[in-house]
Amino acid sequence: MLDKGKRVRANKFEHKVIIGNTENTTDHSFDYKTQTHKWKKFVNGDLLDGGSHNLPPGVNFDDILTIFYNFRNSAYGKIQKEKNYTIHTVTQKKTEKIYIHIMNQEEQNEYKANNGPGNREKFLLKAIIPKEIFNTNTGEPFFGVLNISSL
Figure 1 (cartoon, rainbow, N blue to C red):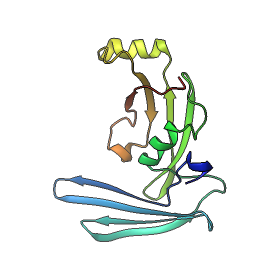
Figure 2: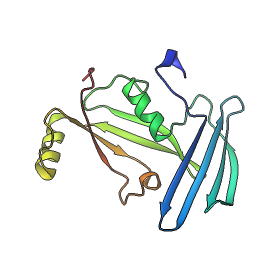
Figure 3: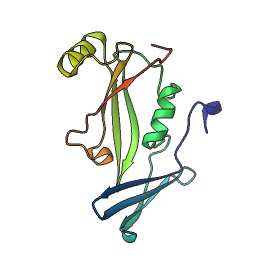
Figure 4: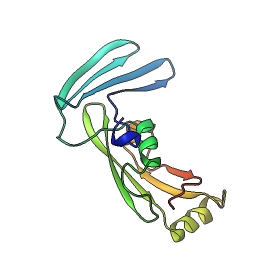
């Protein structure tokens, strides 16, 4: 926990994908004192690959659950419509970024016209996430969120 409980920083996280009888797991650990990211890749429990690399100073790397907690607590800045956020994460061996855009009313109306109105109290976040995280074709899932008081 950092910033008096407003921010969580990932020290470890596991990414697991199961397709049929194959389980792919990557374990990540972060040592912010030595600025090191270590990772190990397993397939069906067998170690396939691993390694480490240096982290840039002053950058926190967040997993998906950490991102939701930190976003809700404004750790990435004040939550506002039309604002863009950049969040650092890791996939496999390399560092990546997740981009989040909070749609303005016109963008929301266009999305709802093409995809159904949904719940009128929601606002929409467009995220650009490395494709490997959710195994998507585009890496651009949409999230509908209710009741963030700062909007």
